[in-house]
Image (cartoon, rainbow, N blue to C red):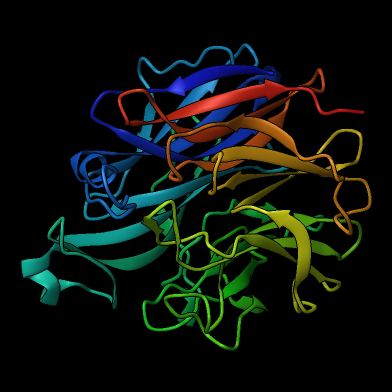
Amino acid sequence: METFTVFSEPGSYCSFPSIVPIEGGSLLVAFRRAGRNSVEAAKGTPTHHDPDSRIVIVASGDGGESWDARDPVTVELPDYGVNDPALTRLHDGDLLLRFAAIEVLPESERDNLTGEPVAHREDLGLVSALQGNYICRSADEGRTWSDPQRVEAGELTLTASREPVVEMGDGTLALSVYSCSPSEGERTWLLRSTDGGASWPESSLIAADQAGAGSNGDDGANLNETAVLPLDGDRLLAMIRADDSYVIEGEHVPVGGIGELLRARSEDAGASWGAPSASGIWGQPAHLLRLADGRILCTYGVRKPPYAVRARLSSDEGESWDEREMTLREGAPRWDIGYPASAQLPDGRVVSVYYWIAADASRVIEATRWEPPA
């Protein structure tokens, strides 16, 4: 395995990378770059709600060894902070970039929030409200992007997502989203669009813990960031993050305590879903990739010592996962790391990107290049 730095910048908090292959065997990575609020918060409990944040996009033409970060492409919304970018390459070659938008205001301006407050950071003097997901499109390999358009989905418009848009065999687009509220457990949904993303009128509930979620995990689990992968025919596989807060080594960790990924399936292209079941993988959240040899790769972060990025393989469409757990990186000083995503190179090697803690305690984007075992 080889490890490379994708992006590092003093005074920035970089996180949540997404990766796709583009023309000529190159790679494109998008991630969130935030400023002072996030850097200061990361000294204690990190925040991902920061008005000083934007999406940064960089490319590599040598299999992930070097990245052109001298003049990166950026995408931002003038009035909002941004979070959780995710890239998709469509069958026609166009790229989609989805990201979440968050309104972040000083606590003194709480009454001016245009949505329900979802977070209040007294230590930072900030309150925030979710503004939904936005999508923009590129027809030139990510050099330029269209203006971001909000995903309008009725009652599910003001939801969050970590996931890329998924293109199904008939051209239908699908996107997993989750509700975000401090007063009830999070639920995960699938949105569908049959007009190229112009509208998202169809939705289905992937999973919800009917017990709700409390502060100690006794009342239920938050079910949120859900990776979705098309299988054959109308079947879809979903890997669902399930967690709540916990304490480890004397530190309160706001998310990640339950940790086992749940698995769910749809037999009708996402119109309905079977009951979720345990996958046997402890981690959060999942990223799914179909390898060239037909196997499914699941990469995920592990937010308990030794704080790692790991991967499993499945040869039976996600019904079971290889007992061999591959460690791509481990030994971070604390839990605020991970969110891996992977892409396969033409020679069969995989490049997995994730965020990590640098020596100066800043957050940087790193990549591990490795070869899946036979």
